[in-house]
Image (cartoon, rainbow, N blue to C red; front, side, top):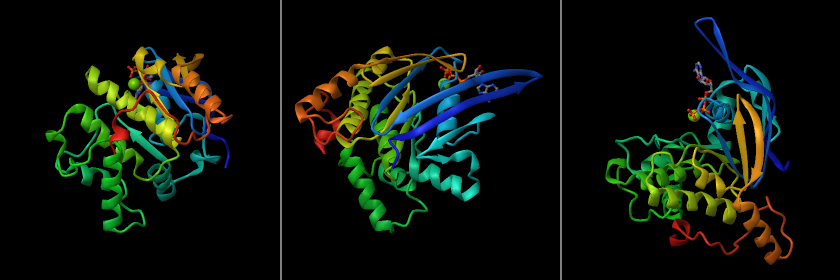
Amino acid sequence: MSEIVLKTEGLSKSYTVKHKTILALNDLNLQIRRGEFVAIMGHSGSGKTTLLNILACLDRASAGRVLLNDVDVEKLRGSQLNRIRRDKIGFVFQSFNLLPYLNARENVELAMEGSKQSKGERSARARELLGMVGLSGREEHRPSQMSAGEQQRVAIARALANDPAVILADEPTGNLDGKSKGEVLNLLLNLNIKQGTTIVIVTHDNQVAGEAERVIRLAGGRIKSEGKGNLARRKKEFARRAGGVVAGDTLGQPETPHDEPMDRA
Ligand SMILES: Nc1ncnc2c1ncn2[C@@H]1O[C@H](COP(=O)(O)OP(=O)(O)OP(=O)(O)O)[C@@H](O)[C@H]1O
Ligand SMILES: [Mg+2]
């Protein structure tokens, strides 16, 4: 399988409102490697959400293409597109988007609807994932009975349900206070470091972006600049200690200074 999980080629998206055209994405070229943790930053209106929605196959580009695991998603329609959305992409929203009348386990199980697993297998998988995000014992609680940070962890468990190729998160810590923000960030970092989950997050938060591996700044629908975050340095250090594992590969079980929810599982 290719090392490139997601690739955009000449991606453009325009919106026309009242005869005025807005170019939200302008010939954007981007590559996300397997096992990367990428933060996307940029001023309001720079195109971050537009980009993430197109990467998640929730919206279509006006020009250019998106390759997900080498598949040109533009060519997919109907059930094929639904399947790739369900199986290859885990999406995390700023406002969690959990169904209020379902408990945590049922919210996670819902993501597996239509998969080949039996009801029992889905339930077991949901419990396993909730344990992994530090929510053992909270399976039967509804969103209204959980804190914002806990709800976002349920949403992350849901995003992981089908073992996606990539987690895409739009401002996942935007509605959280300082402590919950740290917990959710550590959870995402641990998923990336320990399980090699590829993660792309949009954030306005310098502190969150600073912990990522690669930081991409958008302006006017284009990539303005790229830089490295703390995780790049940490992975290099892990690789050195592990004897030459290259950053971006699955890292096995390196020691990490961020030992929050996943380690309680
Ligand atoms: N459905 C739409 N119709 C018309 N214009 C849109 C639509 N969605 C986005 N835009 C415009 O496209 C541009 C990029 O919007 P986008 O939501 O991607 O920005 P963003 O970087 O996510 O901003 P924020 O940080 O405020 O969330 C903006 O100028 C916005 O007004
Ligand atoms: Mg946005």
